Length: 350
Image (cartoon, rainbow, N blue to C red):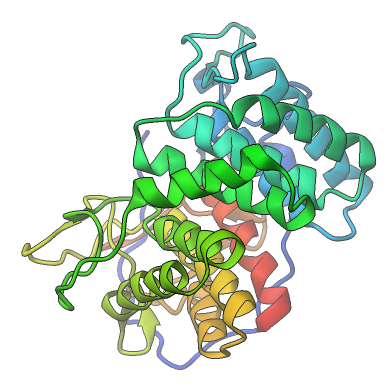
């Protein structure tokens, strides 16, 4: 995809406009009666790239989080749920890629898309105001929750879905076991205060690792595991907050002992950080974690390394990445979902 970027501007410090309400306008533009298209050039959907379970699942997360969804948002949630149930096979695995011709281009598997599908289904089963969505989502979640992925990210995402289910259905045995297994797969922080992260490299959606450990400690295992997750998140916060603004780990990641690069920063990192801080604030009651949520909101509104907003108010779409020269102005599904997700938290703590 061609990256369209703006020239750099001096960062704006201390200027934090009031966050807007989440808009589903661009998400609707990116969706049809089958699902959610993955890519866009500027604000125009690129149909030839088709749909993916990864993004549809994230779409189900944000539409299910709306406490009083409009009819349009509820229709999006129904569409995304239907896509996921179609993507799931009888053993609980999921296809990931569907072409515009409505043909799957892959075999069912247990990659990140499986984990995100369970996250979406778990969120819908726990939070959707529509009973028929909750019921069908729980059936599909339960089918997928018996599987396990060798990939830590997939397990972390699945664990977040399990945590959602447990908050509404505390006796759900498959969700309880999945959440425990997810936190175990992520691992515990090490003794080195300079690098307590369980892995030797930060990659993508890093805060989801800390969040699932926090959730497991809160819902299943108590103090020691909860403290471990909070320690992970605090370290991730400390290395990503520079001069009072959020500067997330870029797409190339960060290896232990390596020099920290600044670009290209991805919206998914800010959204994952907002999610984890919101969970930490809810679990601990510590208002310090609310500051983390507001830093993530600020990243989208322009309080970032280039001082330029990472969304388009005219379309409601989120920009695909923050380069050294400004935002990539393509407005794909992942970036728009990250924007919506983060702004949903802003309504609670801004």
